[in-house]
Length: 271
Image (cartoon, rainbow, N blue to C red; front, side, top):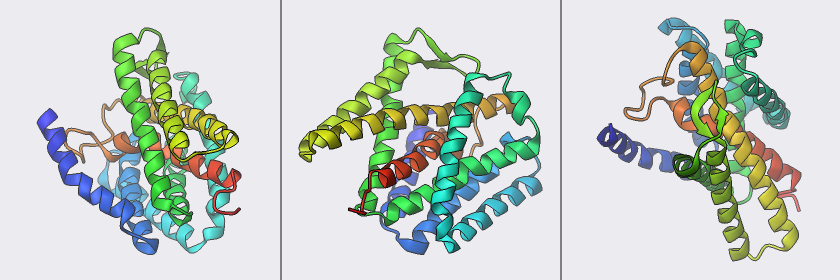
């Protein structure tokens, strides 16, 4: 399994890096759209559709909606605002699972939720790419989410006792969340000191980091909740040794829209 994970990572890493940081404009939107389309194909399975025609149809719908959003950039901020509302609702659904499953058990509802998860992630990346230092911003949110995962893994293994959401993901602990949070705060502080941020800016960055880490955890738990309801371990086997696309981007789907909104609220690139 480890060998398989390493081989897959080595093959995908240059593709991912090239797509995220070398492509611009339409090419970037198409690259991210392809990832989201594959994610939609996986989500249809979590929504209860096992047949390939239905799954491919939902993937095509997600691709068409991405194209529509690209052609109508005025919808970007309303969609990202809707995403924030959705992730607040998702937090409540995760905390109250399995009782909350009665609210979203219907397959059309689960498909709609899939769009609320995937489309704002695409839109958020497109918006970040267009901002000043866009590549750096995309890298920042990715590093933040990865650091949260890494810190949570090691802190959870070393100190984990209090279960975070045992009905959703029994392996996750509050100690893991705090460990991931601490690592991210240390990284944000180090960056702020290196960049000589004034105290107010550094404080805002640290508060934003706390919120982003928490919402990334919700993104992870949200996918775990739908996988548990569907009775599957991975969203697919598209990535040997890693599971599926959704298994790799679940935290990012929540963090990216919020990151874009927080930057907008802070006036990034407008002052």
